[in-house]
Image (cartoon, rainbow, N blue to C red):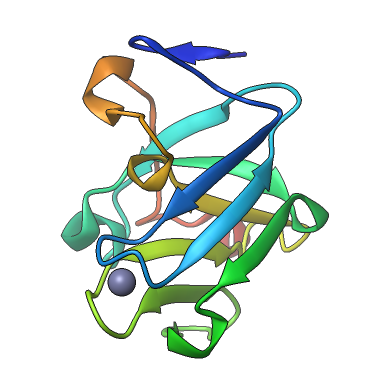
Length: 131
Ligand SMILES: [Zn+2]
C-alpha cells in the first residue's frame, strides 16, 4: 500500500478536485493508494490517467455534483464521470468491480502521479469481464 507520494502523505480522508475546482471529492483512504494502475482500453488510452481503487462508500462528491457528466460506452456498464466545465475525468464506477470506484490519482490534493514511477497497466483491450 502507498501512504505517501513524493512529499505528500495520503490522508485517511483525502480531497480531490477537477482542474477548474468545481468538482470536489472526499475520498476515504485508510490504506492509502490501493492498486494504482493505468489501463489501455479505448477510453483510458486517450485519457492517460493513473487510477486507484476505493469502495463505493469511500467516495463522496462534496461539491459540483451538478457539473459531473456521465459517459458510458460499449456494454454501458462502467459509469465514467467527468467535469462538464474543464473536462477532467474524476472517477468511474468499474465494470470489472462494480462495488468500486476508480479515481484519478492526479486529482488528489498535492499529489503528482509522476512521483509514483512505473505502475502496472490493466489489460483493458481484453477486458476481464469479456474473458
Ligand atoms: Zn472542472
